[in-house]
Length: 278
Image (cartoon, rainbow, N blue to C red; front, side, top):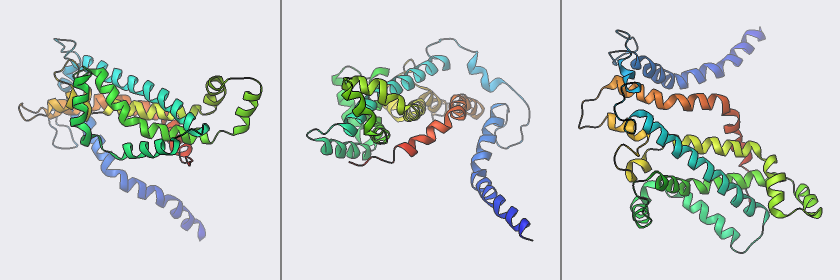
């Protein structure tokens, strides 16, 4: 008599999870169906068509096409990932291992900076970019995005470095290795899952970024996929919802594939970053 009850108890969490995620699953199902249908008002397609995907091959100007925009998005995501991981790894190690004047104040300031939403800093960022001649450039957007992502990245890297035993570094330092060599050859390989997790997190953030490119980039030649998708649904033109769905799925597919192969590293970012006390 206890076996049916045990089976029901084991199945109940999955049923609850399916119930809670059903709106998301229905949304993705509609998105996929709408990209191959002439009618986008239901889950049952009226007729199959590839016209919604014509933006992939009907290219008159490569820079203004979805392929040029995709290249800009890739440059933004990769540039953000490289800079955030490199700077966070250096700063996180310093905060974890070195005791210098102003260390606690610096850590407190990084938390304060992370608390500020990016939208509150847009006007100040505009004047900074204009002064540095980086307005309306991918490089300027990358630097702004890096500045907004660094506080979280530094604290996460500090958490991973805190989990590395001191004895390993002491042994290397006693043997004559320099601090940089210890960091590069000994400590970094030990936190490889954390580096991978932060890199994945940064890449996804850069790939999906909308507000910063939309605000500080003019024209289509420097825009990103998120901005390109917003332009398709603007109020000044007829909205082709089938094409909007197709471009949205085109933007989403790399992230879905990327996440399927790297989700265990992404989840480890929370396991390693929880230990970050001063």
